[in-house]
Length: 226
Image (cartoon, rainbow, N blue to C red):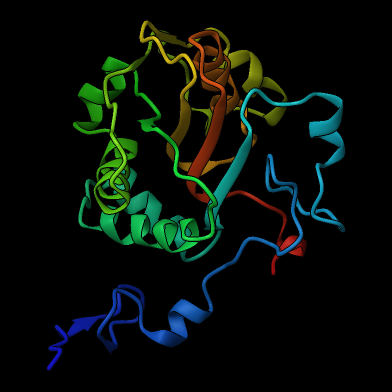
């Protein structure tokens, strides 16, 4: 006989056998059904959006569990800025559920690196915390130290969208030979995609042939919900 451990829903506190009760899980903000496969922007036909056609990103595609809005934004904030590391496996679980649709597993997982000053200030890298659970569950090698953030830049969230590409330029380095490798880059949130694209450029230079972004949440317009 299977025994279920009783939990409480992380959002409403109701009794549940999962981290979310069914009503809360059913009402999580979803990524729109029809979206650009590269950046997830809502499009009518689920093909590449105009921005990705005119200026193709260095990464191949993006998979996000949910949209970055309430209540997901509060959970990510608690993980990222309040050291609530118990939320990491819960958010990773949402992403794992979405990743069952992929055709092929990547060869390795690379977490989005933090600059040493930011890491010292925070005490941990939330992308590594998420990546540990993903790597263990999916049985994919994790390379937590393969890339470095070499420029200490202001947080992207503090800048206008038009300045974010310039802010993150030349912010990463990687010395590892990734020839022929298919990479999954893990991060908590994708906003403009500038940071993920800058890291993907470096991974391409090191020989990576495919780069997929695995993010918990994607910032998207409310009108694109689905």
